[in-house]
Length: 120
Image 1 (cartoon, rainbow, N blue to C red):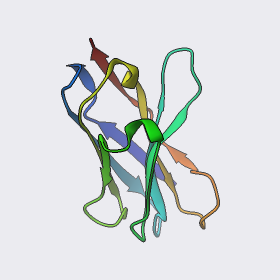
Image 2: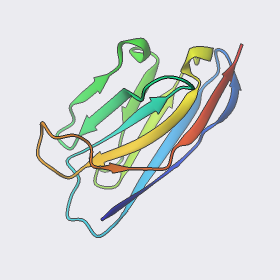
Image 3: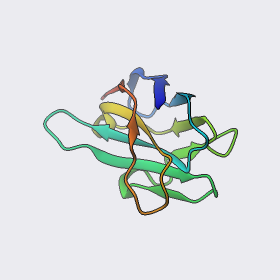
């Protein structure tokens, strides 16, 4: 099992920055990918950014150039999301996710989420 704990959410004004962190723990051999998803009120959860152990990244079009996903250990157990130039539409609960299954499979572990609120 893998436990994911997010931190770093909060209330900021438009144009400001936040950095989210996620640490994985538990009994697992390796993670193949980690990522961030978000769910705004009344909307479906959506992918924000993912990072594989091989270094490949994907981003939602709306955050390209503003958000950066990274890891200090090739997603062995940490992933970060640097969010710059935040906008009110970025307001959501942000969830850390991880996958220890091969590529092509969905994330199979999820954190409880951290709230990001951006005021205009």
